[in-house]
Image (cartoon, rainbow, N blue to C red):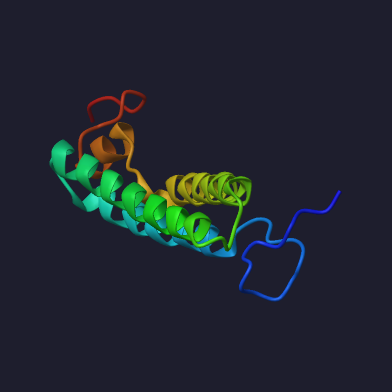
Length: 119
């Protein structure tokens, strides 16, 4: 069973799945948030940044569904796709040295490690 076209003013087509515009918004705003979060010290500011990015994505998603360019399921699939991509980016950034462990900070500060002991 084929779905009806996404928007009556457009040429008939099938597909529209998933929404590339929504996926782009999720990845772009999500990656921007991931880049900025380590620079922000206040938890309230970090929360505000995440909420702002989520609202921007929801606004773009709502507009696409409201104007009839995509079905809600198309947009939901793009949210899932974007979330998977952001999780992958976040994991890669964590392994690439984005986070400094306590033990490496201690050794770099000149404090002897538990294995070597005082000299």
